Length: 351
Length: 133
Image 1 (tube, rainbow over the protein chains, first blue to last red):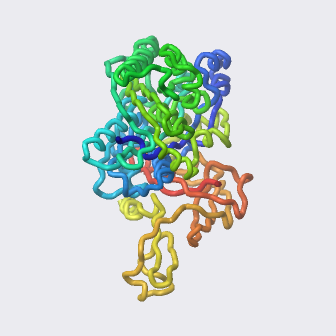
Image 2: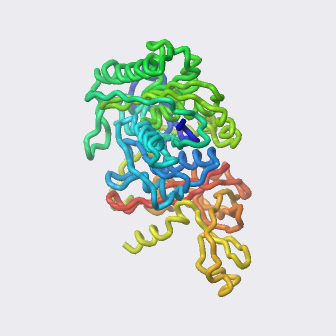
């Protein structure tokens, strides 16, 4: 059975609190804190982008798996903030981890589920025998217009999943997707910030796709919510995933480990995958995980995952865990945040 | 265009710290050298690629206050002499910290970061920097 051979995440060290953003825009911080349940969000350093976050995630995954870059035969990077409009991030990751010249590679975009689409792609290639081992990365340095509600949540981070047939630490027993044309969130070519379709965000987009994909997966596998040790959904804020979990009949104990948005914000393509990574950091052989991503536009990818005893070998290599990355952070004020995020613009002749 | 070709040629060492080892005297070099400066002609054909781990310690450092354009958003920033675990001493930027939090002897490890951009439409250069352990 194929599945996750190793995994690795990366979250930038800098953070900003929503009350600091609210202070600048004259918004009551309590309404933000209660409305979206985000206590802080990660901020990329000026020298970090999706390529650097992807490479750091990939290296953590290789270290944890005791693997060299040459073992990776395919790389797919999902993001909505690739550094180039034309020139794949996957080529940069490939060079940085030292894969062979003979490597499958491409970049994906499907709002926040581009990384899990990559996982499905690699899984398909492994199952069909085209490759033995491949890597899917979900990574973003997401954008939110100054003062917009997205500015309180849009953050940065990524996760790399190495998928193969040998030494599988978490078997992917099944995967499925749901897709519809829903105008909940988009960004046109050349626009610096995305637009959201207000009323479409919740019910017709996030909840419909997440709950449908979850129910379809449980029906396919003949499982009920109580059959899972952990559940993780895409996390645009701290409220949506917990509400979706409760709608489906999952308990706090099942969703707490994978719920990272209150501490790091919405890492978009990295969101559900970082949650899954955090679960794998503590999971034991025999644990069952339901993981469901959501990408605006819209769609969801669901995975039924069963952890094997091989996970202990990954834990024993003592690579930085997701929870480790929540410690020793540095908080920024809005002015430094604006400088880091290039919201303060220099002329082309200066920078 | 010369800069673009040089960056492309140096990618293995800039991206993943590929150095080399003299097959004659076993000395490790980073950045890699075509010929060992100790063994000279005896090293010809014996220089072998070696992956540098990226772990090291700060031998000395300085804080740059007058930054070139590519580093305006990062100033003041730290440039250090880092002694790598494998032996070579190299110059590198120390990031995600402030001068008060580091010292001579601080353990560091390499990270993959953006170094500079050739304007808004040019290529983006990536390479290694260091963060405290």
